[in-house]
Length: 230
Image (cartoon, rainbow, N blue to C red):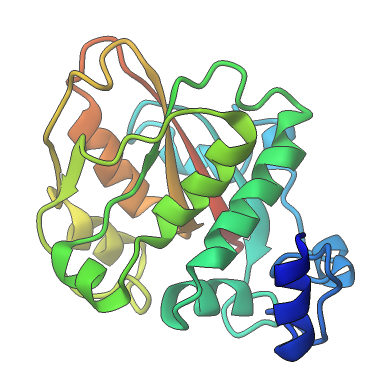
């Protein structure tokens, strides 16, 4: 951290997004205590067979799946996601992307990945929010892994209602045929890692995978910041 950043931090102290305590100069978004206590899934240690990977079995051809932590709505750690999505805090996405990448690199999770593909937002939602939270996560992951990010290959055709209040089957129907492949050339023969913020039923990621399934030689895996535990 350079002296300008330290000076700005002195004038306007940064706070942990979970506990609101002041961050140390070396801390980003989360304080060391809250980072330590994140309820990690450790799915990256068994990426082919874990509760998240099992959501995709028989529904779409996803090779491996992982999420950093168990997400519970209205919990303290849920503030990570709320502030990332609704409080104009794209920096949280980059910071947590770096955390995911650094922790999962140790198990070679990214060793066979070719490109990062953040789940796109609709144009309306992107205008409202000003950024795509999934793309911010991808930026942080790329910063550590140096994997390229592809943002123009897949498009979200429109935005239906929010997934938040829907059950498993309603979620599947809500996003069916929502995503459209725009440029297969960037993905041909690649192992693509789909990036999203939260996985609950897997409906959004399944819809993305279905839109990509006809790309020649493609392999698909998924990574999210949070996984909703039943």
